[in-house]
Image (tube, rainbow, N blue to C red; front, side):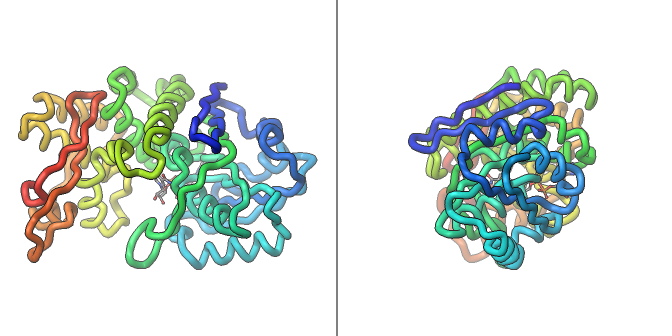
Length: 346
Ligand SMILES: NC(=O)c1ccc[n+]([C@@H]2O[C@H](COP(=O)([O-])OP(=O)(O)OC[C@H]3O[C@@H](n4cnc5c(N)ncnc54)[C@H](O)[C@@H]3O)[C@@H](O)[C@H]2O)c1
């Protein structure tokens, strides 16, 4: 097991990463929580697989489990209202603890519910997808969606601890595992050439799982260092958006349904690297290297987009007259830079 300390002044916490950690939930929770009552929020898929195990590991506490439907539609005000109601029914108080057991959807929903109910109740993240372990559980962003768009209501709220049991990743479908790999590859591309090299040399899931603890740790270290420097996302944290400007255009084209976020970011990274090469920021051959590693994890490397669809991703429509946009580019693999470019030049 590895422990990474996140140093946000006044809100420090540990990320525990390794195999067999669900069984140690009680031990880890006892380090940061001295109360009795714990509410676990999970979704139907994860609850079926892991809620009993976590409840058993919390023997001695008064534990209740609140289950929501799986999938993005649960990041809604309707589900949030259900979660608030169930928490109040369970008699949760400000000195109790809430646990998010699941992927990024459960993590974002639970984080927001915890930061708002009774003006804030402590929470712990137990992320069970690769994306949640390397990305959404680290950094304290919580949110729910509005009909007008994703993550439009939320808060910055750091958990008391994160427990990333890498064994849980073994029950993910290949598609959801690959989705998380897009973000893992992104960390290599923007901050860590050595990680990128390791990922380039992995040939199958067996080799991936042999290195998974190290990989999750490295990604969490990179993200937490960036968050420590820029908790509220006004500066350096923007480099985490590498591939996301073009990726967003792809997700939008496919109505946020058939193409997942990871698939869109994957192709978006190739597009950003190509843009960087064509504009003499990124060394020639970088896009090709990114394409090669994405292919190892069955991720797409290109989608057909019209010029209008691309411009829309940069906030340009027929009436707009340009203005500057932050585009994340690579100086080289392992070194990202925020470039201010004219929107129209996209
Ligand atoms: N807060 C942040 O900083 C941040 C960062 C990135 C993404 N996000 C958010 O994360 C969400 C996506 O997260 P996600 O990709 O984890 O999706 P998800 O939570 O919907 O999980 C994907 C699917 O996998 C299932 N699942 C989860 N763990 C499993 C396991 N161990 N075994 C089998 N099935 C399992 C879930 O039930 C679900 O059906 C989006 O809403 C996105 O906005 C947030």
